[in-house]
Length: 278
Ligand SMILES: C[S@@+](CC[C@H](N)C(=O)[O-])C[C@H]1O[C@@H](n2cnc3c(N)ncnc32)[C@H](O)[C@@H]1O
Image (cartoon, rainbow, N blue to C red; front, side, top):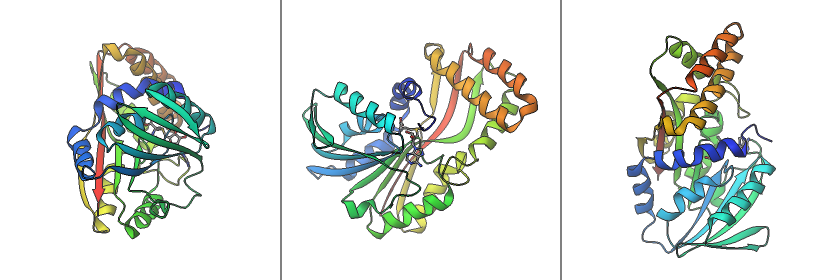
């Protein structure tokens, strides 16, 4: 168990998909469009939403290597991907999927990314990607990842990196206090050392540029409206609980804030997508 439930990931998947920056996604697609096949490694894959969102912009033959530290989420990924595909059959410990004319070989690996080798190029990766992961990692870990990828000039595509922005409608006097405490929580240790939190996108760009990569970034904000009420309620509760860990003396006020925010008209949560290639 990682603390990220399959229910939470399912709630965010359609919004994540709609929020991805289209220019950055198109750039990734163009980079590979002369090829007939490629191998993609997805770090912190959860239930496989990154594959479902990205595979339509990639060549017809795809091999995906999905890595996560949470065995339960990997089991869910297998099921969700089989349900999503037009056809699915087991192959070894993985799956062979057919979806909209694409053939997608998937294999699953349960591994702790803080302990595993990050030299994915040695395993044949043409692209390393991660969704909603790099804000959890430390600068030191990202330096190690980028150094390993740069050694083999492997491109990196990181989507939905939280950037620290949260704008609620209508505004509430406590919004700024909650956001400040939440953003401090985002910089805490999520297993990789002190997390980059809202600095993830910018830091990724800087480190990649230092390794001679060309980099592009684009905003990918969640723009949640009334119809996203279940996600808004879960988000408000999660933010208040994290903020309460930073400022326990305000825990009750933050919990009241979350109850009220569950009925908010809308909220915009800032994210950044980044593509880096050598
Ligand atoms: C915010 S979720 C994102 C999941 C998925 N990429 C998505 O967008 O739906 C972060 C994922 O990273 C995984 N994770 C966190 N720390 C990890 C670690 N040290 N090793 C491997 N996976 C990790 C979690 O299990 C979780 O699935």
